[in-house]
Image (tube, rainbow, N blue to C red; front, top):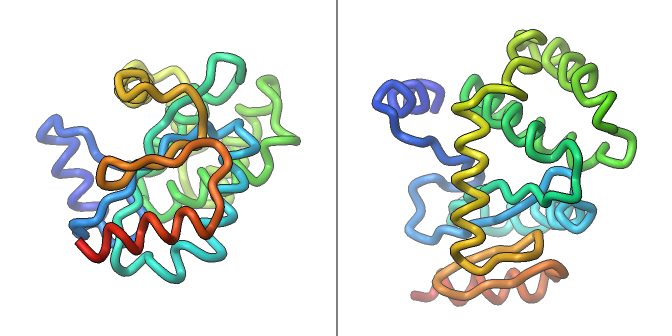
Length: 185
């Protein structure tokens, strides 16, 4: 996976943040904000129920939709992309931990939190902090944001699959029904 990401970056192709089966024909697009409590609840649902049941059959593609009211979500999304490009598994771990710890993270503490995460995961602490201001990475976050606006998204989380969407309050039953319908097609 890391070699594939390196080849995509070298070719100037935007890599996607994917969990589950990246080659599945069934793709679920998840628009999320790393500072959003509803997104944290979706993350828990993914980890505890959705990925164990559907992860081998579905590609879950994460897209960033940092809400303007959240003061550190946009730069955290850029740092998340930097980590994902270095190691996809650790990139997902970063997103999971940011969501889980969002109540204790502030704009002032984010840099030190990210540097500590990088050290703990054998990544460059200076590199992850620099990623917060990286124009290319922020541009990728902005592409996601503008793409979401183009789809009419106003709330997070929002999931899309096969032309159907569920927004904000996402239950296991609704998500599973959406996935089961997509897998039947």
